[in-house]
Image (cartoon, rainbow, N blue to C red; front, side):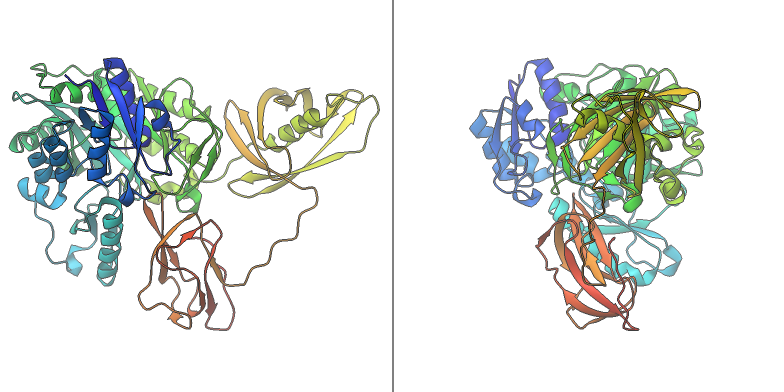
Length: 632
């Protein structure tokens, strides 16, 4: 019987496991890096053990330190979560050798399936040994780990060697294993997976299907269960292959078998020998707690002979601190508030927490369950629309639009969904009256008389910038005997936190939240249709700081992981040539030459930590004219 459990992970999944442990009466132990010293998962645990350092390689990937932490804290079991060491057979053995209970499959099963190359061989699928023009496009993929790290689509044979090197470097950094392989890239398919649960007594459950087709950078964005539009015959085949994968490996615990479905056929991709990020949709549909089942199986209990029956439909959206319109660039800073009403919210952050550069950019998972798919999509899109997420830029608006896109609602999506629709889904759509509402609230909050005057004063002017698109607005309003007025609208009510306007005969209410008390502060204007983020600007624009033309600036805070081979000041570069690789939140981002020309300055070096806007290099084009480049 497990009495105390350590989670060898961080953030949302650690908090998720702790929640089940509390319900089962199991004491909890957290581990944390220096960057996570005050993280939510640390605050929620009964006790915590420090792992000195900040990067994953120094901390959460150090299995020997985690085993020692479990022993020091008196834990008798270890749950790996997902990512990091969750699919590391040596870590599982180290836990077992220390006399601790391992909440996961046997090390032998992990070895059989955690390497995607070995898993494919076991399931009768061979990776490509040599790649020719006829094989293109192909997918370069890390043999270990997941989450899109170490994955590259290659459409030109000449690019293969470079993409292999990039994938190896990214995989080694994320998983401590640089092995990669190449397989055919099936375009126009859907990503479908099966949740399995197996015990030590010969029972294997196949808990329906999940569709995880909507992805960016090979990372899932929206998942649902059951996968829509599959024939009963195809579902039966998916279940049969998944159960087979469990039986040939003598599997125990929770696992996921992943497929690419195209033209009515299922192509085996891999088996993840761990809990998945998207497991809540299966829990909602089948009415189970997969973490509790993992613990029960690890304690030796048997599953029921038949799995529970499925009910309804569930959909999950991953809320990321990222800017989809800027190449999915991850964002950092203080999270002032996070609230998504009416749905399940799994998160590793709370108000006041800092989103840093060291780990994945996911803030939370929002999950809705309803009788039908259409009702579940409606509930989740509406909940996200009303969500209050105050802090760094997020993908919230993109999620709402994705859930309502006709291609998605009609279940006609494929893995190229965001390649086709990103521009429209990520386009800025701030509320046109948000700057006025912010200005009226500010006027009330700053006036000793509550914003009302007996005599008319001169027209007041306020300036704001909408985020993240950067559009600037100048707002004008007046104080009169009747109160605050503005052209084109009727001001019904204005306080420092709430403004009601009548626009074209329709009454609209705005809630205003301000962080700070001066120019440059962020203001969030909320309506039932969403939140507009504004930055308060000085009345007179400040002179723009000058920088050297042709500057390549860091588009986000992160770490320089490498520079192009042989790159040095005076080198000739060509337009679009990758020059610098920047790692932020476990993803690599390439900084490319904006034009063909000469590298006149190089300030980037491997291992250097940079802040957003840091000068990395300067390129002068072939005509003697410098070109500016500020993004990946």
